[in-house]
Length: 157
Image 1: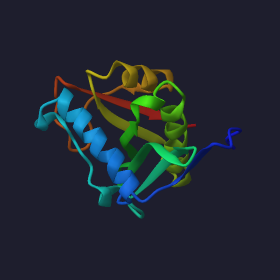
Image 2: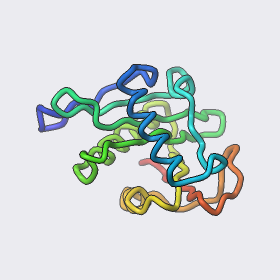
Image 3: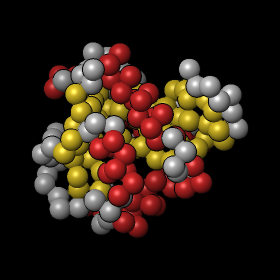
Image 4: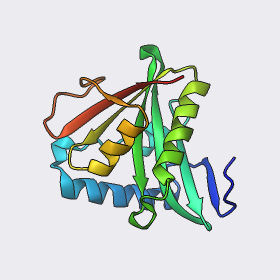
């Protein structure tokens, strides 16, 4: 339970206009850092049940962060996708709270491995994943090796 009543973390349809606004900001940010072939934008449909889950975090009624998981149940893992936090909210624990929720969603589905791909030009994200216990791993799923990508994995308790 979040002790701050101004903060709400809850499921969110990735097609909702507020979610689409954050997703568009995320895509603009990623497109400024990486060439198109190094961006792996998951469509909203891939993050809706039954094959995925998507969550938002609101502060004072404004959506300030979002993230989802795409389930690969046959392969025994879930991939964290579309994690994004507004600039004004970075460093305030939003991404950590979203990651905790995404990991819990994977555990609820019986998946014990969380994986993700992120870019090498995002030192804050790389540091967060490492602090949360993620270790670098080889490319997985349909990813090819990319010198601009970092791949991570964590076994969930």
